[in-house]
Figure 1: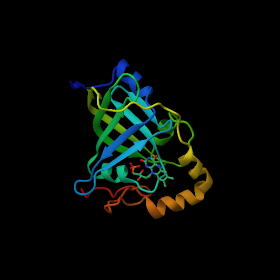
Figure 2: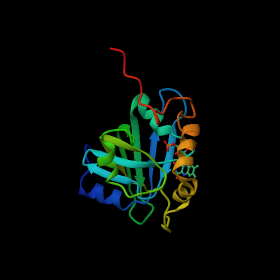
Figure 3: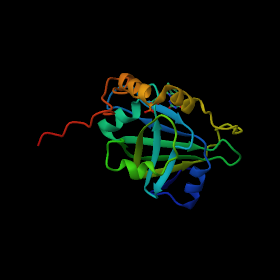
Figure 4: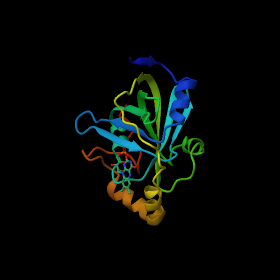
Length: 187
Ligand SMILES: Cc1cc2nc3c(=O)[nH]c(=O)nc-3n(C[C@H](O)[C@H](O)[C@H](O)COP(=O)(O)O)c2cc1C
């Protein structure tokens, strides 16, 4: 049976803290829906109504483009261990870049991980927990270090070039505003 919540409570916070992976889903108004698996120590609960994750450099930048267009974001956690549970956080997301005034304070919540690109902040609108009875059992063996290793090897200068070549538009051609803020709306 699904249960709905309007904010996080201690039990939900503990469940999130014990997960090693989460999934983010976002979609443009028209075009391809993105769904990504995220690991490493990149997720933080900022309050009962707000969460954030440190987004790392990769070959695409889908979430940022979709959030700039419509802000819709769903995050999902699910248990792969004894006690099953799936938790979905629904809300509105926005991107905080190193150029933004909020960056320093938010960035301080995360460890240093090579390749940081931006921070995705989500205001929670609703939360749903469901049973997760069909999710398989897996044993956690550890986090892969391949992405931070790749970023370290690239170095910040090459990563910046890489992001400029690859991360300024979504796969549907929508702007991600990674390097420049969106234009002010005409008054
Ligand atoms: C070295 C490397 C590692 C990657 N690892 C991940 C990963 O762990 N999770 C992920 O969602 N995408 C990973 N990607 C793929 C893209 O970055 C992914 O398409 C992009 O992250 C999707 O957009 P999003 O980050 O806004 O969800 C990786 C790409 C590269 C080049």
